[in-house]
Image (cartoon, rainbow, N blue to C red; front, side, top):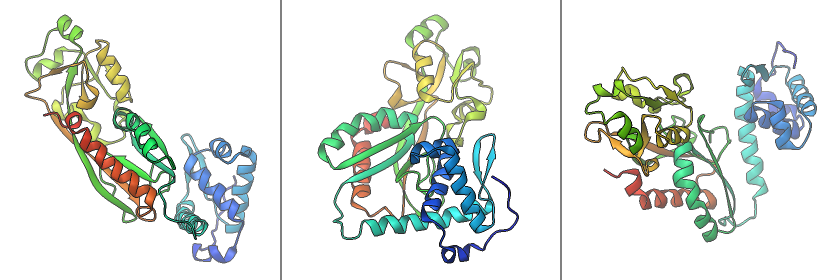
Length: 309
C-alpha cells in the first residue's frame, strides 16, 4: 500500500459515502493485524483485502495502515478512522436489531487471561450453555494479553488492571491470591527453602521478562530483586506444568496449584484483582448482562479457590 501524503478531514468522511464494505474490510484488517488473517475471516483472498483498503485510502487521500515487523499498524489517520468506523459499525448493528426483542441470545465474546480463562471460565461454560441454549460464548484466552472491548474485538474483557477509557463500563470482578509452589518431588530432592533469601539457591520458574504484557505479572520482582527464572515461559499454564514436573519453585495463582506444595506460605502471599469491562454500547443488552451476571456468580462459587487464605 503506497503512502499517501494528504488526508480528507474525517469530518467529511460521511459525506464521501464510500463503499461500506470497504470500511468493514478496513476494520477487519486493523483488528486482525494482517491481510491474510483478515482475508480468512472475511472469506476472500488477501489481494482483494489489500485492493479494497487501497481504494478506501485513495477515497480519503491518506494512508490508513502500514506494514511492520509485527503486522499491520494503524497510522494516525487510520486510528481516527477506526473510531469513526467503530461508531458506524455499532449503528449498523443496532439498526439490524431494530424490532427484535432483547432476548438472551446471540454471541458474546470474552477475553480473559490464560489461567483464569482455562481453569475457571472454560469448565463452567457447558452449564451456562445448558441454561441459555440461545447463547453462544466465544472465549479468547491466551498468554499474550487481552483483546479490547474498546476496539470491539470482544464484548467483554476480564483484565488484570482497570482500563481507563470512558467508553467502557468497568467494575472489579474478584481478588485472587498467588503463592510460591513446588512439586513434592522437587522439594524432596532440593530441600525446602526456609527464607526468601534461600530461594536464590533454588531453580526458579517464571515469565520470560521481555514477554510480560502487564506489570501485575512481575511477581518475582515483588518477592525479591535477586530472583531470576532458570526456566521461563510466557504461558502461566506452561509454568504450571514445569513446576508440576519438578522444574523448580514458582509463583502460581492458588486456583492453579492443585497437587503442589506451598513454599514459604507465611512469608510470600500476593494478591491481584480481576476487572471486567464491557463497551458502553453493549453493556445493557440482554446477552451481555446475562454473561456478566454469570461471571459474578461464578467467581463467588469459586471463592475458596480464588481466595483460599
